[in-house]
Amino acid sequence: MKSRQRGISLIGMILVALLLAGVLLIGFRMVGPYKEYFALQRIIGLVADEGNDGASESEMRRSYERRAVIDSIDVVRSKDLVFSKQGGQVVVEVEYTRKAPLVSNVSLSFDFKASSQFSRK
Image (cartoon, rainbow, N blue to C red; front, side, top):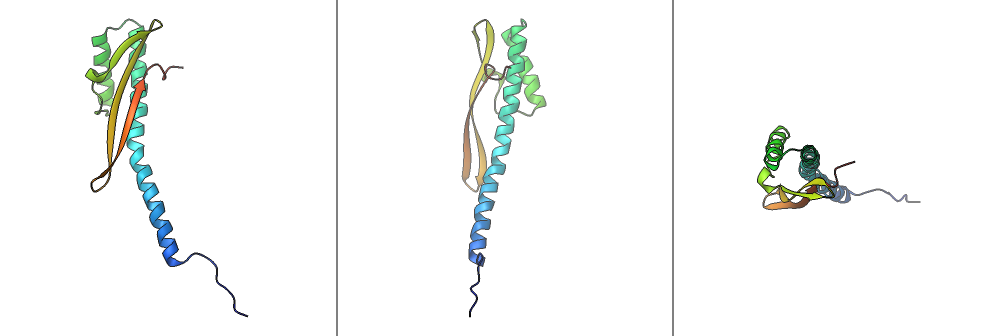
């Protein structure tokens, strides 16, 4: 009686490894933009709190620039911030696009919208 072998073939294993490598590559390339977004969200919340404490728009812009330098955020400048008041609270918003190179001439494009309205507790 012949025994039938079971398991994955070499070609199957190579295909699974390539698929896993592709997924990991995309996942690793997504970490940077999302880390930057969450840092930006935190900074915008802090700047809005300063505005609620009576800081002027120019003071809030300078505060943002200082905090952005500390957190190495270079994709959004203080001139990109939009300030408004909603319900007596200062709201700071910004929309931006971040590209992350993947391989060769292929890039991932992320569209973010950060707002202090959603970063408060």
